[in-house]
Length: 187
Image (cartoon, rainbow, N blue to C red; front, top):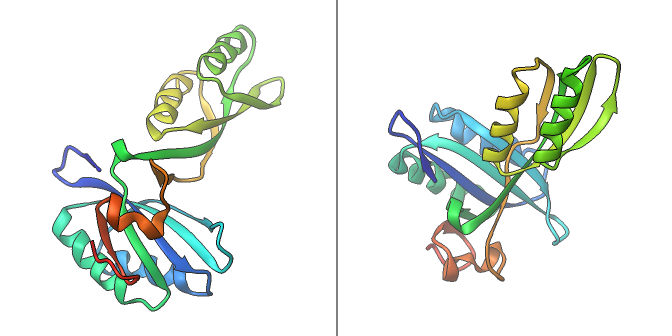
């Protein structure tokens, strides 16, 4: 979790859920009902069939977050909820960005791509489409440089994250601060 200028903290929450219709709507609805804006939401399958992992990044004070987590735990399809602290997690995003790159500016954009170790996926006479993966900070730094050339189009996946170490989300209560869960340890 990191602090923002308004006193609220950025929290990364990992939620293990049953892969059932409507679960995403119910989880997102709990945040919306409290008036919280979700900064990032990524959902995908896990190694275990029938389960999905949601990575939710939300900017909120601790107390209201605890209230939402208690409500999340009441949802029948929620298996486990863990907050991932930035220093104890590997966080990544994927970004596709189409940037103006005509004439001599193309060489400068390609130089930036090389420094950031990103891939060029498409080249036209006027633009380059770039694929970048990395921490949110890396992608923000790349964007800051590319904005000088003109962003034509941008798409980001949202953050995904795994805790560092050799145990999975189901075992997190013993090694990481668990926000809650129904599988025997509430943190």
